[in-house]
Length: 133
Picture 1 (tube, rainbow, N blue to C red):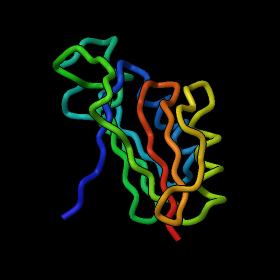
Picture 2: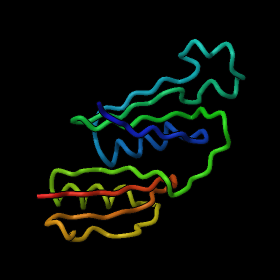
Picture 3: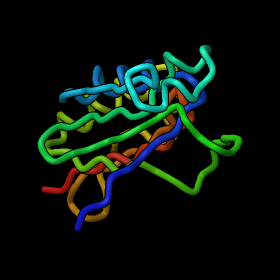
Picture 4: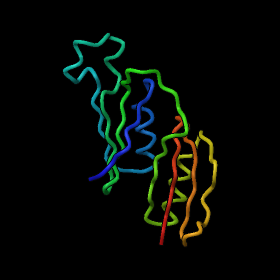
């Protein structure tokens, strides 16, 4: 069993997921509403909205959409934990993800012989980055 984070955006899913791909690498795919069976049921202004998006790399999967049936607000109850393969990778991802956001806790040594850092990206999502030797 695995669990994958699924983010919901207010119309900027394509922009956000493209940013995450730039930061993390991997393969990115999008399905717009216009390309789906929902196309005929949605208003014209929604045709370019993203129904489903997936970013994947080496077992890491991040999914997202522009569709929500409730009003969205960013809180602190969900974080994305990124387990990195090296200190160098952690620092690189941290730098890229924090651009335009809030670098809450810069990467530093953890009490468990590794590295940890956290930030809120420019889309309001909380990221925890970790590397353990």
